[in-house]
Image (cartoon, rainbow, N blue to C red; front, side, top):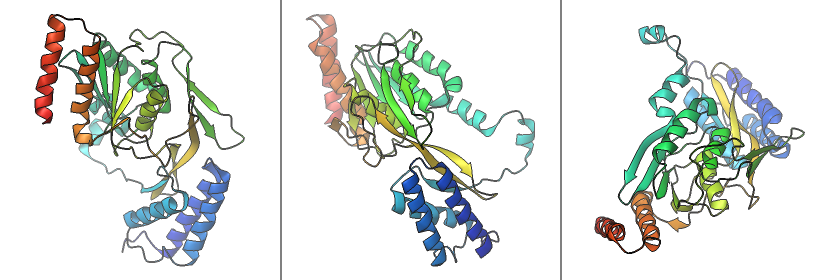
Length: 327
C-alpha cells in the first residue's frame, strides 16, 4: 500500500475536494449534490482500502462522473518534479514551454492535397500569446487553397480564447457572436466573438471540412460545433467526447489536484452545448476514413464550380484516384 494513502490523508483529500467543488463548480446545485454524495461514500468506507495515490485519483474521478456526468471533472495525482542534470541545464524553461514548443503549439501538419485542397492538423489550443503567431503562419500557408480540411480528430482542447481566434479565420465579419460561457453566479457571462481586429487570411467562402472522432475533446469539439452552428463547415467522422464545460485545475494538497468546470458554454445560433452529447457529424464515418471522405467531398464540390477545361479534367483525375484508394 502507498505510504501516503492512510485514512487520515484520504479524509483530508475528500474534504478538500468537497470544499473545492462547493467554491468553484459552475452549478452550485450540482456542486452541493456531489459534495453530499462524496461525504456519504467516505462514511461508507468507499475509499478506506485504496492501495495507491493513482487508484484513489481514478476512483474519485469515476465517482464524480457517476454523480455529475461531467467529463471535465477529474482528480489527478500531482507529479513530483525530480531533480536532474537536464532540468538544471534547462532551468529557465517550464515544462509547459517545452511541451508547447515541441508540439509546435498544437499545429502538427500543414499540407496541400491533390486538387489544391488544404489540410491542417491541430491537436491542441495553446494560449493566444503562445499560439497566435503559429496559427497565423499556418493560415497564411493555406491562403491560396480552394478548399480546406481541418483535422481535429486528436484535438484535446485548451484555451477558449484561442479556439475563438481560430474560428475567426472562417468568418469575415469582425465581432460576430460565437458563444458565451456562463460561470458560477454572480460572476458575469463571458461573450466570445470573432476577432475585432483584421486578420489577413480570413475566408468565409472557401469550402471547409472538419474531421472529428471520440478523441476530439473540449475546445476541439467547440470549434467543430461552432463552425457547424452557422453551417460554415461540414463535420465528418465519429461523435466527439461530449466534454463541453470550461474548466481549470485546483491543487487539493501535496498529492492531488482536481480539474473543476467553472463555466458552461452556449453557442450563438443553437444556444446549446456539446456537453454530454458530443458533436454529431454531418457525415458519419470511421475516423480512419474521415480524411479520404473529406478530400473526396471537397473535390466533388470544387468540380461543380469549375468550368470545362484542363483544371476540371485534373480534378476528375484526382477524384478517380482517390476513389480507387477508398475501394
